[in-house]
Length: 449
Image (tube, rainbow, N blue to C red):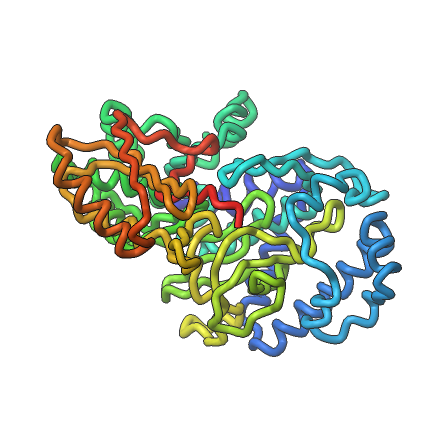
């Protein structure tokens, strides 16, 4: 660690957080201790925190005070994590309909926040200083797993209009002393990719951070144009906010000469899990309870896939309790060889809208269609939109003017997977547009059920 990084991580950043009224440093230090607790001790810590959180919101938050009373639910009597199942699941519609009553009566100054809206209408909610402190601390801890720290040079490839629209003087000054440089994931033209490569070579960052799709596009540009950026001293490449596909991991690692660390979370759900150097996705169990539920809301055992549901125990000012993320994944009962007692996510398969459905009702992951198009050399970019059980539109950027054979092959492969009645429409475009948040989605399902 450089002297400058020690100064930032040990002095400037803690001062920055303290001036903002955040408890980030204390929380991170506690997390660095608790991560090494045996699994059973960590579970008891999680249970204790969950009980205190539920008691708090049952007293301070009108919505939960009324809900607990109607269910005759006593949060002080919580004896196992499974007792949480006595409470209903919470969806985005529930939050939108109860914004005022979900705000704690004794909440301090809250920050209005929203999701990127990649799955439809954005969710507006509020964050207090406690939640921000815990989310930043969880990310900070995971960063240190890889031998990098706040203050190490970092390139961030991001697309949220919230971040990109807030580059005021204070923010720019903060990024400067943290040695963080932001590149726009909205602007991935060849001209900009060249500039990005030049910035990376000049800054020689210790870490990269961004969307898998954006970093994979940069990696492809590097490889195709013969640039050398695998000798710059990059130690790790953090990716988040989209599903990380195996081919993307391979592309990125090969081009930049550094391992990829997958992270999972969201603006609404918080910093849920992060990959350690041994390849396991560790859940931030000190703050978050993760459940996997079936379509009918039943909690599933380890190893079974379902919707990821979270309870964030640092959201007392505006609670997220049994919140449906819309993502699909599964839990693992294994323990990681790294020695941390933090529970594991077995896998994250993406959003429920990243899946397609065959005419007979069979649900398939979008990969079933993605790999058909990825194997065609002349297909440069694509996006698959399922409009109904019998209709799919494929947006394509292609290098070939003769597409008859390609269309026939794609239609045949899609029909084998989704049914012979399927109609495939091909829409040839110059560029595949990203979501409003800057994310990229290979597959979008417009099915309502």
